Image 1: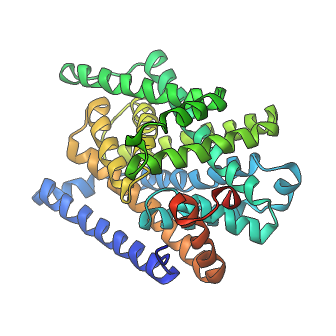
Image 2 (image 1 turned 90 degrees about the horizontal axis):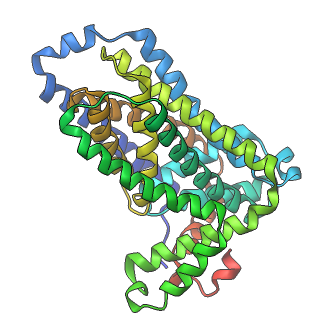
Length: 357
């Protein structure tokens, strides 16, 4: 097994990523606006930008709350939402350095150690909350697309229908997992019979999907109210972030309808389902988000990229600050958790997968 990265190397890589992102934003503004930078700054609305930052900052605590909603009742009472938010910040840092959702596994391990939450409960609750986040984003995108349409330039209508079709396929897959978690697991077991799925990307994808489906089966006993609470926090969190994005666009001096923003953000989350397996997947999400926003919002592509970059910088900065504090306050615990996280993601690195789970 490869030696997992240390807390110092994780933080160093995150700081470098933040620096590169800052330089990229600065270069992009200079290239696309040049002498018009002063005009761009002059048309910015500081009050709307402040509201945008506040709404974007409130998105992460809602993720912690939906995670907490799916814990066992006693574990829920003993856990601290602020501490869980800090764990999610650490998870964000880890996911930028290691392919796959290692951050989720490490966050669960630390919660288990600190608050004596059952490890299986912590991990399954977090993974299920992620899938509920995907499902809620899919439903928001569908509602907006069909009930609150937005204007799209004629040259983009066909492309948007392709986006919507792919969105429907991915959303249907997520819905299948939520409603019938045992069936997809049987399908995966059948597909493993073919040799093409025995190595590389497919093996890794299937192993992680099998764990995720197993987590759903483990958490079905949580009941209606637990899932309703988690779903509420999903919708609230998505709405806060979407409105934060809307205020960001407004702050830059562009008038885009809120429905276009909600569809862009929600559909981009669904498409991120196929990106999370790779390091740097956040930048793939940003590129996709920018392209869809350009089509649905009718704003220049350069502006859409700037919006995505500003939002990414804010989220990265919050994660670096909060994650750094957690990394150094619980250094040994997190480095111990990294061993667990990497062994969980890579099945061939452990002798007994069931014991890890």
